Amino acid sequence: MKLAGQSANAGKYWFVLFNSHLFLLIFLPIAVAAFHLSPSRFRLFILFSASMIFYAWAGIKPAVFMVLSILWVHGVTAMPATIDKRWRYGLIAAFPALVLFLFRFLDFTLDNFGDADSTRQTFSFFLDVLIPAGISFYTLQIIAYGIDVVAGRFEREKRLINLAAFVTFFPQLIAGPIVRYHAVAAQFRSIARTRDINFDFEGGFRLLAIGLLMKVFGADIMGILADRFEPNAEASGTDAWISTIAYSLRIYFDFFAYSTIAIGLGRLLGIELPVNFLTPYQAPNPRTFWRRWHVTLSLWLRDYIYIPLGGNASYVRNIMIVFAVCGLWHGAQWNFVIWGLYHAALVLIYTASRPAWDRLPEFLQRLMCFTLVTLGWPLFYLDLGQYITLLGVLMSPSTWWFGVYYPLTDVALVGGVAMLTVFPEIIGQWPRRLMNKAFYLAPVQVSAIVIAIMFFHITDTFIYFRF
Image 1: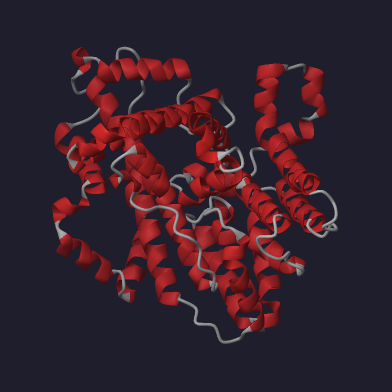
Image 2: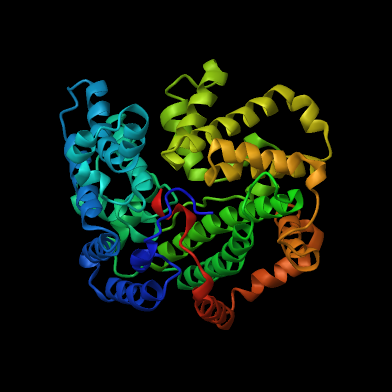
């Protein structure tokens, strides 16, 4: 089950993936060493250069257009304040959004609104390029920066290298977190001016170790189990549930692992990135889930789409629009739009039933929320017809038998991980505290990284690699 956005040719891009030997053993040590050994005034140039090497390895064309987008917003934000803000807002978004459309949504548009060979030939320059890694993430950052400057929320960054180093910052360039420039501007300026900075090496390596373990032994193990099942009308309903839950756990650990590693790498370079996940599968309802899942995206959608549309004044309409955009942002296919609208429906249903929902026992609220969210994830790898077939299998009591999974191993593993993810309190406080303390020890961190590297042969690309 390959997610739209994952490429069969992803192997050629392993240099830019955190879970690769090339990145961990070659690129990262050289980049971090060069950054710390260089004079402070050269740090941002070193960081920008390293980030461009990191990104250009995944494609020269996308790297060129990313630089052009940075130059564009830098130039537009320098326009006189006497020019109407609406024009400046439009110009801010015009070029980055156009690049995003051409690389990410043009093929989808032609498939649905006209697919003439001559048209495809005209745009072959863009259509022949695989979806550029991280384009949806850095585009949102560029647009947010420009809008905030024009709106007067903070002053324009006059030094181009500061802005360029921020947009291309390799720890979070590919899959976030989505960072607002005003939140880290002082940090980028500081590392370029001050020699003595209290870099959090211990915290950085700890998060790197934890993230790698989550990726290899959380996301990828769940991915192996989820991929064993192929949905069809004759499939086992029990197997379908196990695979669906395994995929739900996979996408959580995969994205959480990437964000954890990104924050850890940021600390090695003196940049504190925002937290992107706040135990979302422990959320008691769909609305709270979206305050905890991919937090930086939720905040972006709130501040730059939901509030400008009128916010709560047109609640139902705006929720539908925001989640439709959220779905389309995740993938240029109708199944992603349906996934977004599905979550809009969950939020609206919760809002309408909130008094009754909130009176339920907390464990039941969590279980309901996790189940409803989990039932939406198959839309990431199935079209609508396949998804409806899967739902039929999931809901049919006549298919409750074991096929490709084994109850004493597979079910126990998936069920155990799900229980600990949704209800971590069942193992008590002291085991979790002991584990947290253990990862503060350097030998444990090194051992975790080495063990993760030893199992890279079973690992896969990050799900959000090409979003």
